Image (cartoon, rainbow, N blue to C red; front, side, top):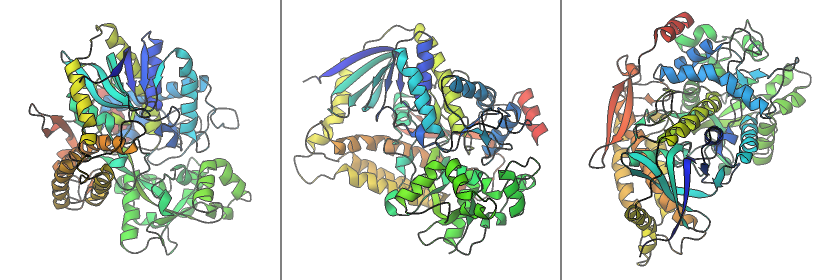
Length: 607
């Protein structure tokens, strides 16, 4: 019997309602396209709200020496030069305009004494560059984008999960999914699709990511024939909560360190002074007093070592924990209360600068951060890799499919600088929306193939059919096993033999996932949702592991204990994941894009 489903038609379908998705939808609508937005969760709950510290843009409001050229060089250096240089250029050039645009739409940024947008220090950025709203920047961005976009006639499908992209004639023609609340199937025909689904954090046990982050966009694109790039580069944010267990992994913004927070081990020592990379030594303070002056705006001071790149800070924290100098609950101490020695109004100052962090620790851990240190440890945070896109248009290797934000690869290379994610989603969300609308204008609306729809629906309903015997495994056990094995075998520190073991275990998990059963029916059934998420989690887990095995060196967020050094040859290669004609996952390495003469000159000038 053919499945029952409702059909909606759009020029541009945007998948994801975070910052990248909303900015793409706004731009496509402004170009005259009929736009629909699919959100796995509720509107306003996007993971963008978890980006607290600020949005990186070379406005030069705090330090006039900043420019797009410096921002470009910082981004390339932070990404270990595996970034797509054209994307890094566009990002650095256009970020200031996108931030000013957001301000014009009503975003309320913190201000300098003369009324300009205030900017703070962040790891890897040479100058204070992050425009912010206390430590609630992402929340303010989502509020502003929603307020601006809601009046444009954009259709929103909240609490809707996609099961498959639809293709015809070698291009994307829509998507098929279901409404999570009632389980009703939905066919969304579209002339162009923009993926803006975020990352893959739920493939790991400890993560700052919300439940939605199961890699859906990457898996949907891969299954439809698009290439993925640089999937080995998973960012483990240095500072997530470690105690109590119920909040383990929740993000502790880099803004704490940007405002003067320091990292200490169980002996009270600032261990970050012990290990400063040679390429950052000239920029990094070698004493506490100079680091403090830097966070207070002294343009002649060097940055504290706590503001080195995230990959380096995370590894230093892991070292302290493994060598027995960690905090009581398996982390280290992040201390901003020490500034009481420097400022008479320290409690009020901290609460004003970091209101969310103050309330987060007060409510969830019973700690007053103005008086005592926090316990923190690394948490899976961000995927630098993703869907391979054209740097100017954001179109993937599959015609009609665009991507922006965290689910798109290329901008960040081997390691993302803090704050670049928010400017990334503004710059490339705008570009993806504009070019998707332009692409859609030249396409005819294609009807979905009923046989294809029937096959997708049948696969989705299969877990119910396996419940009759009563002995089949439930989806939660498989999900829990996958997260634990990825954390243990493909985490912050990697070894080839362990990743080979991970691939074997992932194959076994795929077999288990193919046999999971759920009871009940499609209405209000979280077990069914989890069963359907397993395919995406397994696809991205295999892609991460295979890419990491191929990169036999340590670079950025990818650290291999069996290959601890950089390989200059591999520093000129990007890893590409693709599906062959038999539907099997394959991996190859392509040469990184050439630098233009102008960009090469900038990097040479910036050292």
